[in-house]
Length: 562
View 1 (tube, one colour):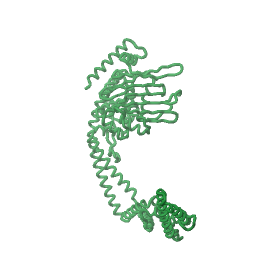
View 2 (cartoon, helix red, strand yellow):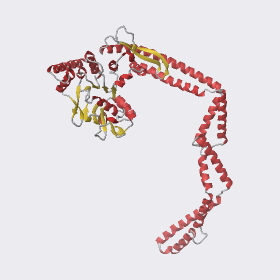
View 3 (cartoon, one colour):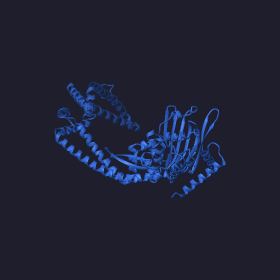
View 4 (tube, rainbow, N blue to C red):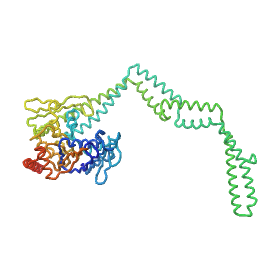
């Protein structure tokens, strides 16, 4: 659940810090007090569009911080899968800071892309505003709701369809890709034969390129090697008085001649004799190396030519010899398929037809189960509409055949008639924005028990309603808030009276600025706020009594809930 909201330097808000409670949290305030910025700030913190225009002109940056407390093991497991590890006691901190042209999102202090924040947020909180209500008009969203209502049986059939569709789509793509005219086939065969022959004629060996590179470097620097090795041999030998061998030999003789007089000199003489032996061995090995050197121009030319051939093939077919040889195998396989094109094509067509038949059968089974679920879904929606003061409304789901997809071959359309005697029409052609929000609220109530999301936020749920309808909406909000946290912004007293915790949003105006504040209301303050919502700016004893009575009725209703 959302434990704390902290907003700084955004629009009318200088700085606010709000602790939210369990159950139904209601926020009310006068028009223009800044209610909408609360939802906008939460949306922005959870990966929504960063509105730089919201940052106050007199502030260097804007900041939103959210603190969530998660106890559900399943949610914790899903968070772990996306790389989010809660702090102690299941606490998750999400923040967003806007400064200049930069926007930085963090989860538990670690900078994260907005997309990752949105993925995390989808497990923690669900916002139902105007955009969410509009989604209800889209056929694909209507189908998702129906499938979710259908439960595990329907999901299992849908998974089967998705698997069969992927196989069908892959074969369809392969057929389109491999459909060639005879002229194209012969041209491709000729080209493949040329490439295969070019690679095979080179007789490449794994690791050959590395050997060639080493040999080429050696041959290309032959003169330098001969001069350097020859000079080193002369300097370490015995050919002149200045050579190392000659010099060390004389030094060894001098020490040996006096070694009998001092034990330490004897040890030093032995060590120098060892050095002389090592140098002697080195000098002989260097002489053998010089004797083995062969730098014929023909050898260099052959090495250079072979290296050019190998590098040409690597540049054309792969970065390494192994990659070139792997590509050779693939080209041989493709050539074999083209040589046997007609038979291969027939096999592919048979596989495609079988896959399409399997997919069609799976789609039919899914569609049948969907239609069964649609009957129960429509019945429950009608009951919800009745509870929400759609006294004479009818609701049904129309099915249309669509092209194959991972979701099957169904397109659905929610149909509604709000008056008796009318034939049901598509949802978008009949209902107003306020009616649409109530329908969405009713559907949300249907999913309340199965919904794992701990926190739901409702914005604009009271659009275009009043009186008895508002009371019905309030009762639905109370049902949904059983066992979870609901946050709702409203201007209707019927909904506000249902609050478990009531927050007041006020705007303080001075000569230089307007500042929004938000605070939890005491019982007496809540009564005054309800009275204001009922009667306007002037609070009278009658409006206070009406507010008190409305609040008491709401408490009785909540106490009656199972």
